[in-house]
Image (tube, rainbow, N blue to C red; front, top):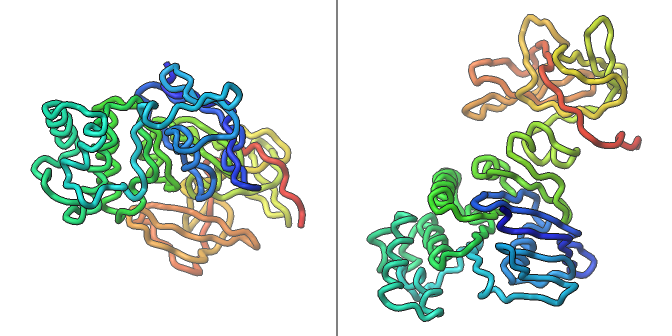
Length: 357
């Protein structure tokens, strides 16, 4: 059953279409990550779901209830939508301690003192902040502040949790730790969650499904592996993961396939790739290229080498072509060295032939 259904949502800010006919369904207990560059409409989408923004067109359904319809002139205000939201800056009250920050929405709704103590206690235990009830936001680390904001969003037992880049202000190590915490809490509570980010690693690590946005449109949605391995178009291929995008003609001779590029350069392709002959735009991930000193394969030169810890990233040149390759960190080649490459796997992209300049 779908917890959230969005149909044909549109929102313009002057000449800019922040949402351009966007439709989406989120299943109950699902963690959906909306991934896209800055300015693509991610935050406008969250604010529209929460009732903090009024779209120009479309409909929004929450738990089967119509909470917004431009055509029917329906607009449920935020406090009636049972939606929890965590903002990028956490938006904690600086003059209230941890307990009072988390309790604030319960007090506004006039819950009993006993119920407030019970719910706040449960939430602080859930986010592992027991014992810090009397501290103020300035006495907390960034990670602890984020957990307070999350506890406050969950204390009203919402039907939907919205996360607006809550990890973007944290350092890399803490971001990784809290990523796992978010996943743990979401799995334990079973709350349906929509999380927006521009960080592809975060999207891959957290999501049940990823939705890729660009210019107010949802370009592709699916499990992380599917979005990474089978991007629908050039934008998704470039935005999700490192990529080599090559346009040419797939040729086959004596059972051997190759990609013929402009200038006559011919790249050998693995025989396992069932690519039909003809024009093709191919996505080749850096890890799908193997390189060696003694062949077989096509000759290339190492232009640069970058140590990434768990991998080595090489830039290779073949004539006027440059390819990005990632190998095991123990597979070491020198800049300027002549090597040989083979392409293990290439994915055809549904895209038009690039215009000639």
